[in-house]
Length: 354
Image 1 (cartoon, rainbow, N blue to C red):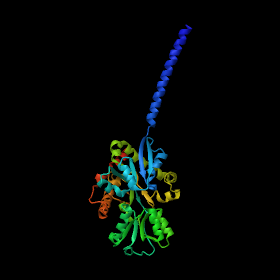
Image 2 (cartoon, one colour):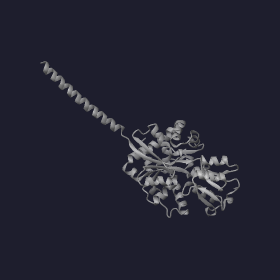
Image 3 (cartoon, rainbow, N blue to C red):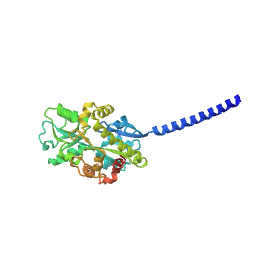
Image 4 (tube, one colour):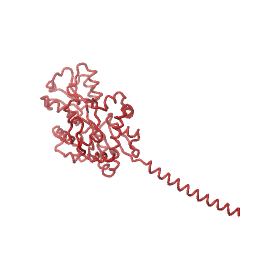
């Protein structure tokens, strides 16, 4: 009898172990499913306005996403990686959209993220008293970038043709050094470079600043993010979650600007002071970050007016202006449609997912 009881206990204990093992396996499997994260490969160059997904990651605003960051200072190289499928998303200035569409590079502009509200300046040497003094002079711009368009518009509005000046292709740091040395007559510079030249070169002045109503109402000088067509078609649910994570991070920053600013500064190597002077959570200066609904209005997929008196769908007018200038500068030969090169519907999908 004792032997039979012992056998029964062993059998029951064995069954208990088996059930326990099965339960543990299911629990581990379930936890593995919960903990599995989708990797999103993000590229950008060094600028605070591109740092919000670092906040999303640090504050776990999208728990099922893992962002893998690549920082390259050459936006053309970033777009090449996006085009070849090595990145899913790239932050950059907005102006490359028409060129990418004309070249069928396999990615689209998804959303404008912010506008420059005082961080961009056209700075001139002390001896330049009016626009006509720039005829025959060298002006530093980033060719193929918004700097070139901003300078061109300002020149024409002040009676000087772009053919009357010599535009020199320099990145911001080199342009600032050339301005300070007096080697060039003018430059389009974003902060902190513009502020440095104005402080270091006595008599230098800004003749146009992106906080002026013309620039803010058009929203022409700003940033955007682009996603590969593969990402938005084959992983659209992840693309929507990524878009939502980005704008959730913007809202987190609005509520916690010091903490979020430190996260961004640490990630890109900017001081807290520089980040705070560039990222301003009001309309008082710096760069103005769009919220999700505002970005949707600017792109024309959500109803209502965007900030600064920008009409609904202003993004399309910006696209056309940029396209026109690229044709004038010889970078493009034809017009391409806004809807052909954008996928603003992602904004609406992310908004509806809230």
